Amino acid sequence: MDMRARNILDQPLTVALDPLDQQLIAAIQRGLPLVARPYAEVGAPLGLAEEEVVRRIEKMQRAGIIKRMGVVVRHRELGYRANAMVVWDVPDEEVAELGRCLSGFDFVTLCYRRPRHLPRWPYNLFCMIHGHDREEVLEKYRMLIARCGLEEIPRAVLFSRRRFKQRGAIYRPQSDRPKEA
Amino acid sequence: MRQPIESTTLTPLQRSLLNDYQQGLPLSATPFADMAEQLGVSEQQVCDTLAQLQQQGAISRVGPVFRTHSIGASTLAAMAVEPAQLEAVAAIVSGFDEVNHNYEREHALNLWFVATAPDAQHLARTLRQIEQRSGHEVIALPMLEDYHIDLGFELQWT
Image: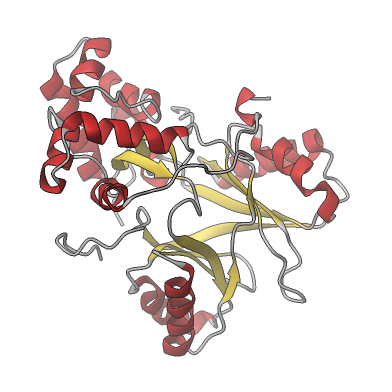
C-alpha cells in the first residue's frame, strides 16, 4: 500500500483566478519552454515578471488547481503497451472507501467516481491500470480485487485497442499557437 | 504512431529525468540548472535531453498537470460504433480541438474520449456537435469525485 492514498482532495478550492492567471494557464498548459529561464520567457509576453509567474504557479499548486509540475510521460512510448480502464458497479455508500483503496496502489493512475448511465452503463467507479503487457495488467487487476475485497462487485475490464489521439488538455484557447492535429 | 522506445536504450540521465522529475519541478528562476546540479550534468544537457525525449514522444510536456474540473469543464464520453464505421467516427471525434484523448476499447461502448472546454456550456455544445456530425449518441460520464493523488507514475524498467 502506497502512502499516496491520503486524501487531500476534499479541500475546497478557495482561490480565485484573475485574468492574468487565466492567461498564464493558457501559456503553460502545453508545457514550459526548455530554456534556462522558462518562467521569465513565459511571463514576458504577459507582462509578468519571473517572480510573479512563480508566485502564481505556487498559488495554483497550493490551491490544488495544479496537481503537479514536472515531466509528463507518455506510457505507451515507454513500453507500457497495455492499459485497461477497469470499472466497478459499487453500492453508492461504499464508493469513496473503495475508491481510496484502489487509488492507494501506485499502478493505478486514475481513480474517479462517475455517474451510471442505465441501462447501458451500470458502473460508477473507474480506475486506470497501465502495464507492459496484457497479462501484467490482469495480474494487477486481480491484486486489486483481492486486496480491496472486490470479489462480489460487478465489473468490466476495458483494454485499449487503438489510440486515435492523445495530448494534454487545452483549457484555455490560445490563438497565437498552432493547433495540434 | 511513433515507435515505442526500448527502455534498454535509455541512458541513466534519460531514465532519471523520466522517473524522478514527474513532480516537484523547481520553482526557481533556473529550474533546469537546479536539476542539472542534482544530476551532476550541465544545464544544457538537461534541456537538450528533455527536448529530445519530447521529440521522441516519451514525454508530452514539462509543465503542469491540472486537477480535473478546477479550471474549465471536461468529461469522459463513450460511443457504441459499428466496427466498419469506427475509424471514420474516430477521425470525426479526434478532429475536434476540444478532444484530447480518444481510444478504442474492448466493449460494446467501443470509442472512449475525453473532451475539455473553457466552460460547461462550450463542452455541452461540443458533445452535441460530435453527435450531429458522427450520427452516434454520446454518453457523457463526467468525473464526480477524484480519489487519486497524482504524484506521477513509477516507471519500471524491463
